[in-house]
Length: 219
Image 1 (cartoon, helix red, strand yellow):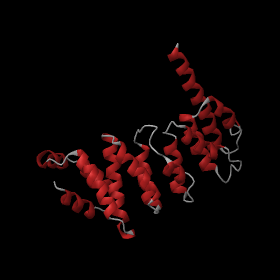
Image 2: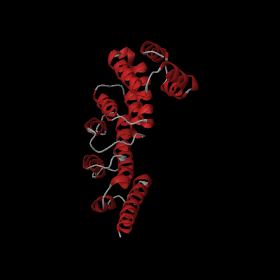
Image 3: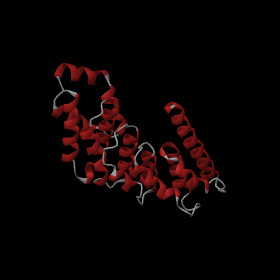
Image 4: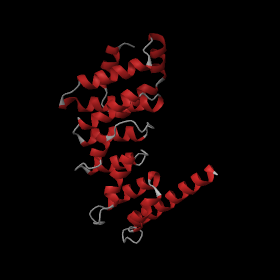
């Protein structure tokens, strides 16, 4: 498979699942083996494809390429291309494309030195589809910046208006929060909104469990 072959395949696809299926398919592995399209070359081709298909009318085929790039990063992490995918969140404006990108990013385990500014910006998006997904992504990133971005939503007083943000933020803080966050979460444990209340209780228990386990492991 040559770069032109890959570009043609991506241009023909209409659904993100299609590119993922193609990347998993036996004939894809056969082409890579027989025609020597190495994985780092696929990364490069996908990035070039995304940059070239920059028109608004190309958003669906870019979405396919983002899904494929995220799939490859999940299997073989490359810091440069992970940063590229995250930075593209600042370029795209369509909420469905951003949703697909964040779904892919959420599954990738990447180091703390990756710049997550674009993810934090998405967590403040005016589109709930983007905002909620970005908050969930932040829950996978154990950094000071991601914790602070999540705390912004946990601190919201209007539980009725922000019930979904509070639910996702409470859950996210449960994964990466610190003991000092328990006081912040406790104000939601008496909420009249079940999802807000239960997510806060879960988060507190999860934080306590994590730090108790860490203390035992260090003994």
